Amino acid sequence: MIRSLFAILCLVQVSLLKAQSWKMADAPLATPWAQDVDPENVLPEYPRPVMVRKDWQNLNGPWQFQEMKAGDRVPIGKDLTGQILVPFPWESALSGVKQQFDAYSAFYRRNFSIPGTWKGKRVLLHFGAVDWEATVYVNGQAVGIHKGGFDAFYFDITDALIASQSQELIVKVYDPGNSEGIATGKQNNTRFDDPQKFAYAPASGIWQTVWLEAVPGKYMTDIHITPDVDSEMIEVNVNVSTQDFGNIQTRVYVMDEGREVSKGRGSPNVPFHVPVPGPKLWSTTNPFLYDVKIELVDKEGNVVDEVKSYFGMRKISMKKFRNIQRIVLNDEFLFQMGPLDQGYWPDGIYTAPTDEALKWDIEMTQAFGFNMIRKHIKVEPQRWYYWCDKLGILVWQDMPNTHKKRTEEEKTQFEAELQRMVKTHWNHPSIVNWVVFNEHWGAYDVQRITKSIMELDPSRLVTGNSGIDAGKPDVDYVVGHIKDNHSYRPPSVPFGNDMRAVVNGEYGAIGYKVKGHIWDEDGPWVHHNYKGKKAATEEYVKFIEIIHEFQHEGLSGAVYTQWTDVENEMNGIYTYDRKVIKLDKEAVTNANRSTYAKDRMKEKYQGNK
Image 1 (cartoon, rainbow, N blue to C red):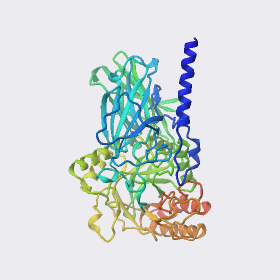
Image 2: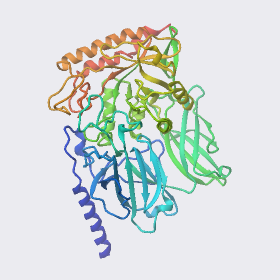
Image 3: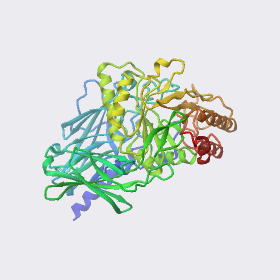
Image 4: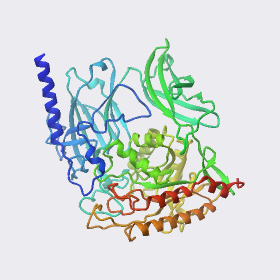
């Protein structure tokens, strides 16, 4: 008994030492949620709401850490020299490191234990995202390598586990950033030494939750639920870890607040249908979500594996008005008005300090009258999309890209990451549009790649290139569902036709500096040419009036740049630290809501089908 108490006290003491040794590094700005970060309870929420199991363990928190230099071997069984708070990028203040490395490489190390209740089960090690290449070792054994900075991955580590209570986990990370032609989005390696205008700090290493999951010998590896509103059913495809398909089946139960709506049965790895009679449709005004229970059963009817999920019955498509294609939600025209959201945080760079911070951004976006968000060349953690699903806001999801000309190997990698982005997120009803390229960055084979995404996910719209050049029609590419023009001050719109819907994917950038809330006091700044809140708000309302006129010409959506300031871009509705509103909230909210007000839409579009 005394020995057990002593062991517990030692564990508590070690835990306290870990917590005390982490300290947020200095940063020019920090959000209100930075002070809520608990090093012993970092982002504790279940990281994958679309596929939930009960047996899991969060591995976020203090890890050992050190820069990797040429000639360094994997430090198996050896303590590292520093510490980092996972899952914040090593360049971020919240990581406690806030450094860039010449070799773009580092080691992570920690120990973990397997709960006794997991005995006899297989253990999966999950990473929400690691930028960019991760090589993972468990107890000295290499269990896998993953390339790609924006998608989730996992390894079955069961065979690498040892009888000891303590298991060693090492992650070797290499992130060349924009020095190579890989998907980096807005990251720029020179950001710390030479402040940029439209490029921001790099976000290297582990930047989403790391977690363990216990599964049975035969388990579901992935699920795909596609709503079919017209047929009042869902299509379900359940992938499994075994090839023994003859002895197992899948059962699906659709629930409405605990009440069973319907059920269905099918074979693994083969799509099958489950009815949803008289469906409650998911929309921005009523984001209703059905709960789902999916079981893997053997031939005797015993439940082998079980996960819980959800889905929204919604349809995104196009319909002609005045012989011009418009985007419709559930067969009704809804003008989509949203901000450009880069997904950057001054304290965590790519990683929000808390789940509440993620949710707050979406809630405030809605509070300003927006019904859509364009997530700009960054992919978020699953919980961001979960909150979009729950709160009811549409998402245009960009694929992160590069400015560099790619090698053939880098092209293959890009297309693999693009496919994984779609497959990882296609269960989210909030996502209605995939954006393949932005303003021709790294663009190649646009027609072929866009068509491949249209075939991969026919339940959504696809933009081949956001930001065509109206003066150079040869770079429009004429592919996908949406023709997207970028024009800032004032906004404009390309001519509509009966082939594609027309949107303005970026306009505005009405900015000014707010003293005490500036990332880089010396600049160089962009979009800081307005006098203050009054002048900026007047311009915002004026631009909405121009948007109204473009609606006559067939405009289906508009994206205002942007949600917050980001580093040296001063064009946010909020300052970068989310502490100051830079435009008049009531005026902006009323202006945004006017673009999709029901009375106005009825007056403009009735009888024009």
